[in-house]
Structures are given as C-alpha cells and as structure tokens.
Image 1: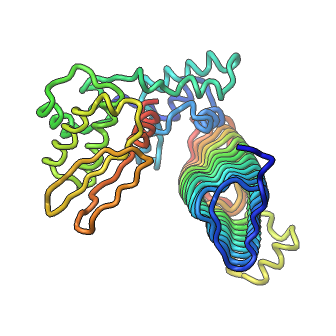
Image 2 (image 1 turned 45 degrees about the vertical axis):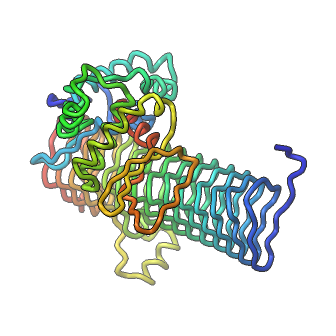
Image 3 (image 1 turned 30 degrees about the horizontal axis):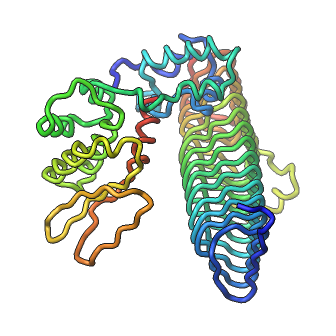
Length: 261
Length: 207
C-alpha cells in the first residue's frame, strides 16, 4: 500500500465507484460505492450508499448515507441521516441529525444532540444526550450525562450518572457509583417553552432497579432502589428502598417500604 | 448451572465492596455477563451469582487491583480457548450443551472422558440447530459425524457450516469463509453458521 498514490474520489452527479484506498471521498449527488473503503475523509453531502465498510480518519454525513458494513474512524459526525448496519468504533461520535447503528457502538466521547438509535450495546467513556437516544442493548460509560430523552432497554452502567429530566426517560436497570436524577422544573428557559408547547409532557424517569453508592432522585418511578446513601426527592414513587447508611425521603415522595440492610 | 447462588446484597456484605465497585468491574468485563443471574423474588427483581466462582473472582480482584490495572485484569480473566477442556458432566452442569445433544454424540461417537474446546464448539452448534428446530435428529447425526471425520482440518480454520436440503435429502458442507456458494433454486439452505462466531461466544461464556 503506497500512501502517496492515494487519490480523491468525488461523485457529483449520480454514479458508482469501487471501494479501495482513497485520500478524500466526497459524494455530492447520489453515489454508490461497491466495496470497502479506506480513506482519510469520507464526506456524504448527497446520498451515499456504501456496500462495504469504511475505515477513515473522519466520517462526515451531511446528507444521507447508508453503510452496509462497519465504520472505524477517529471522528464521526452525522448532521444528516446516517445508518450503519454493522459495528461502529470511533474516538469522537457526534450525532446532530438522525443516526441508526445496528451493530455495537463504541466511542470515547459520544454526543447525541439529534436523534439516535442503537440497536445493540453502546459503550463510551463519556456520553452526553441532549436530543433523543434509544439504546436497545445496554449502555456503559464512565460519565453519563443526559439533558434529553432516553430509552434504554438493558442496563445503564456508569461510574457517574447525571440526568436532568426533559420528557420521559426509561431504563430497565441503572447501576453505578453516583446517580443523580434531577427535575430542574422551570429553571431553564428552554424547559419553560417546552412546557408551554407540550403541556402533557411528563418529565420523569421510569426504572425497574436502581443501584448505586450515592443516589439522589427526583420524579423517578422505580420498583427497587438499593444503595448506601439515598435521597428520595419530590415526585418519586418507589416500591422498595434498601439502604445501608442513610435514607432521606423528602416531602412529595412516596416510598412503599424501606429497609436498612 | 451452579445451584449454590449468592445474592448481590450478600455478596457486597461478604466481600465488603460497594455497588459502585461491582458495576465498575462488570463494565470492565472482570465479571462475565453470564454470572449475573436475574430472578424475581417477593421484593422484586434481584441478581444472584454462582457463589463459588464469584467469591473467588472478587477475592482475586481485591488482591490484585492495587498492582494491576483493571484492563490487564480483564485480559487475565479471558480464558485461553485452546487450554479449555471439559467433562460431559461439566458441560451439562454449566448449561453449555444440552443432555440431548451429548447423548446423541455419545451414541454416535462413543463415550468421551473430556471434550476439547473445538469439540465443545461443535456440540454447541449441533445443540443450537436442534433447539432452533431447523434440523432433524438424523441430520444432527450427519453433522456430528462430519465434524468428527474432519476434525484435523477444522483445527485453527474458520469455516462456514452449511446445512442444505434438496428434495428432502440433507447435505452438510464446510466451506472456508472466503468462498461463496451458489446453489440451484431447488436447493434450500436450512442453516448457515460461522464456526468462529460460536467459538467466540463460548469463550465469553466460559469466562
């Protein structure tokens, strides 16, 4: 493989090309790429269909792209609509448009500002959700920060979980060291507007099990909460709380039964 | 499956660890997914672990964690597949191969003291296809026999395993993954499986 002989590939009208080694790949019109691509930059401004995998430094999807294989890249930015049929591995993943990853997704940093669907597991160092994320597998991270909606079908496992409730959030199980779910009420102007527009919008988190060392909850519906130091705040409905060191049930919260273990 | 289980609560108490630590170790894959056994109790969902394995594992982690990074520990706990071999009772106890499939194999190929990693993978594939209801018992015999006949050739090779039928006559084919097979329209592909995929799955389960 000679790095120096790499050329650019640009598809401007409608066309198709073979896979292979390229410098920059740009699809401006409608393009089909048959085979795996290895390039520095992959940019889809129009509509791109890749029948293979992509290995690149940077992948940018501004238009719409469907990748039948896996994606391995340093940076992946999806502004338009992107579908990845196999695994995704990258350092920085930012989703501003809409994205679907059918395989497992792995990233150091992941930012979801648009809407994302992960049909399998998502594991990252840092995850920030400001839009809407659906994770059909499990989600693991060191830092999980949400200011949007999420629906996690499996386990959310993170060292630190911080949730600012915006809309309805769901997770089957939640575990980690520090877990904080806050309902910021009308503190933020955005939320004020959102409330005005969608009055029926419920800001709450529903979970079956929440386990952690330090847990602070608001507006949370859970069957079981277990931990060392637990604060059950306003708007919570909890079936059972098992705590080791300390439990504080604030006014406006309902706890059916509690047990010190 | 081990019968003697310990609840998560008792484990934390026993080992003197916190939820945070346990979840961190799970995240770092120091504790295999298959050890987390979820059960419904009258207090709701609870998680249990196979007592002996988890206590051993937690003690090891506690002893080593100050000297070795968690990532290195994870590598340590991932088994070398070639070294793994199990007896038939271990296979059924740990729920790796169903008794039905083992019986089938014993009837066809005789009793075995120990099964090698590759043999376990082959039994698992047979097991899987039988459970899916794709394969008949006679075809399972055919598959097991074919595995046995080509044991040496399968060593260290990645193959796709195909079960096809034409007019009710079954055929078992092993083809290298790089090959594509084109068939006539009357031939039906009953199952197409990847040997390495199953090997990987087994590796994870044996952790």
